[in-house]
Amino acid sequence: MNEITSLLYSIPTNVYILVIIMLIILITILFICSISFNKILLRTYNAQKVESGEFVYNVMSKLTEKANIKTPELYLFECPVANSFSITKKKRKAIILTTTAVNKLKPEELEAVIAHELGHIKYSNQPGSFTSALSWLLFLPTTIALWAALLCGFGQEDDIAPQFVRSYVMALVGPLTAAFIQLTTSGSREYVADEYSARLCGANVLVNTLKYLDTGDRICDVNPTHARLFFVNPLSDNILNSLFNTHPSIEKRIRRLEGIDK
Image (cartoon, rainbow, N blue to C red; front, side):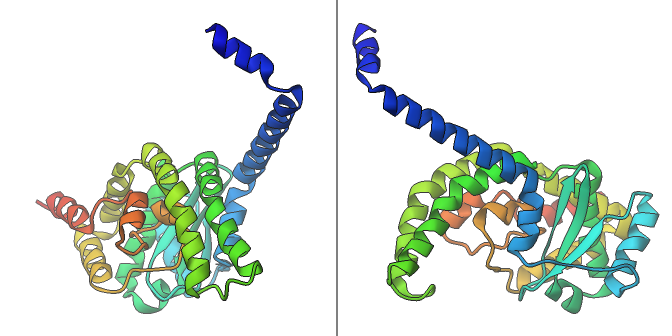
């Protein structure tokens, strides 16, 4: 104990001041990010707001009327696969769909996906802004590493060298970030949203939608810390990405839905 005390006293005062300043900066950044996280999220995917009167907005409006809940905002973003996520913040609720979901899904399948997101909104069971912002900040060094490699002349974004640098840093910070995400995210929330969608649109419709999405390409270029927000897991099946996956398997979700009709 005396040795520890002596060690603490031997550290220069300037070091303590620097640590305190860094902590204040980090807490400030975390506070700002947690407040603005939803805006950051929408800008990250360049999501465009859908106005009332458009087809997909009308689909959502009919469902909210049927469910007797307030109609949230609706956004679309470009992505080659059908997927979605939602924002369940108290003062701002929104559903975000990929353009492929709107263009490729059948009307009843699109309804099932939207109803699933309405389930998240109704029960407010998406991860909170604070935990989402913190997981994003924990993972931020990977993005910084990639840009540092690009600015230092290691090649283009898709070249081997920058991706190696990013992968190396990701291997360092990824497990810690993934562990935090796993601790703060419950996979059961997907079951709750699925059951809500089944009540609104029918279990068979959602089962068919999940089967369709499972047979097609579901991989989308998203920040791994955002993957838990999506309707189906958008990450590729490698070891590191699997750490970020909080979704129950589609097979388990289907079995649970099939049990509803029995």
